[in-house]
Length: 225
Length: 225
DNA sequence: CGACTGAATCGTACAGTGTACGAGTATTGA
DNA sequence: TCAATACTCGTACACTGTACGATTCAGTCG
Image 1: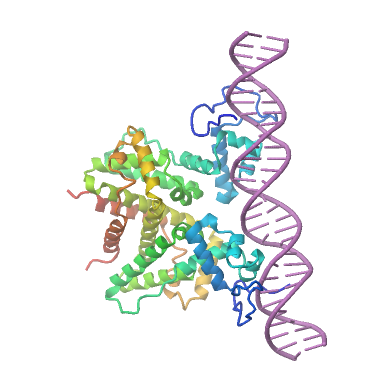
Image 2: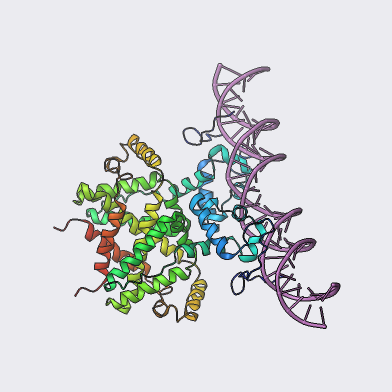
């Protein structure tokens, strides 16, 4: 029985060259995850199957299991890859700017990869998310948040970003779909007059609302001086 | 080719009696959905398969498809059943109380059925949710929110409830799991000192934080007098 | 009574899924 | 040259959603 790396160490195929005997470049964790992200981006969560993933890599389905323990691990790694964060080299001015930068980058990443927002809460926190939380935690402390209030503050921010992004992502369907939904609403106008009239499903400045709400939230969470 | 009801009309089995020939009560949309909710509650989203559902109903798998178009419809109907809302008969005092009541009821329902929170953003809005949104909309208008601010206000509240509930639900795993996660964090203490020290993954007064944040949010959204 | 109709149930079959198992191959080190 | 290691992959199994068609049953009409 061979020793699967799966969780740790080796796995890098030094220079085996040779490729997969059918010409393509050799398998590797990096390539697998990159292709998985591609597939997820184009086909959605249900579009990712081990066989399709392997096909796209020019490999047999079972070959993936040398590099990866199971499908869930593919999700975890893809999620973590997409959520990686390197803070900007240019020194940011003040704690507030660095918090806002990280959060908007986070949100941006989830919107670029719409499957990620819905997946994130269902998987354990990976290194990328832990790193972001650590940064957030340190920055809030630096901003003067008391130890006792820290957890509440962190989760408030987390909840805000997740809620806003998941919702927005779910309304990112084609305009046709939305129009259809709104039309259905109008047909039942007697039942839902108010949300029909306000065109709730159609007119929403998501990005503006996000920034505004975030400012308010940060104001409320940090000590007023 | 028989005419499937699936979306409309008939479907009620008048008094066919006879049952399923194997004794159980006859199939019906109500029974199917009720059993689906049971299954989802006990086995989670992945635990619901058409065959298992049919087994539990003492029926053949394909019999379900007389009452339901496909599996997605089962999800939609289960979700809607679980999220139904009848406002309290006792007249509530003021708009604020009625908003808070509806939102806490909503949150309570999602926490009682943990699969629902993660599912809700991925499905179209059903009658129950539309009804809740309509109520929210009318109440906010009554509270003095301007037409132009209405959509932003509604979505802010929605985002808040969704974010808080999805996150809390995802941390509702067994205490053992959480302990393990925290221990892993401590092992990597050098990497994540701050969130390790604050025991972010363990100590969180979700319910208290929810109520507090909601109050703040409503304060910010409604016009100050 | 028999013929007919439509509602409802269900068995079989098919394409697709994740992955356990074990055989196969290529590359390395002794 | 031999053995170990790293890696690939074919086959098989249990399970999924559901298309299709046969079957059963209740009720109505002639």
